[in-house]
Image (tube, rainbow over all chains, first blue to last red; front, side, top):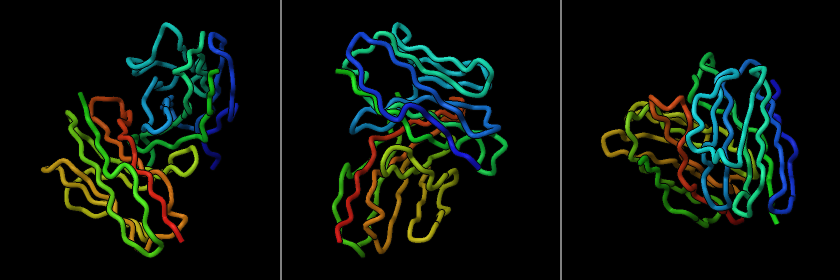
Length: 117
Length: 112
């Protein structure tokens, strides 16, 4: 079974530039999450999708961050314009209530390391 | 506000030692607690705990949950250099849409 795919793996941009990250979840997983992990911290939820609908985006800085999951499969997270404090690893995860471990268990992609200069 | 606190934040041990990692939590509407291992980027699933006092075990790793005292421990026996990683504890609330609320992690280094 293929895992969660993310691209790019690394991205370096100047502040005020724009950047986009892509995620393709495990096939059949209806729930998709984006997390931000700043160095030395645990991942923090940015947004959660159930199919193509948003379940929770309460911690997404909506003035600069946006995300979509138009067809209920892959997803894009965008930052525009980027700030220095956005430097972090952006992790995508997916889950499915039909799994033996249930919806609680999330499977993570390799992440995208963003550096904002 | 929910809190997930892991201790210690970092730990250095010798191969063969046994380590115990701690995770305490203050969460409303607790549903489950999960442990993940993060070696480079992607956290990989270790255990999910929902009931108190039932030990989950996988090889040299084991974990248990105490819902009365609001904590969990992760034990690793006969540590190996390959156990070096950050160990993340996360809690799920029953009304949260299953989002994971993570602690800061414990960074474990196992030296030869």
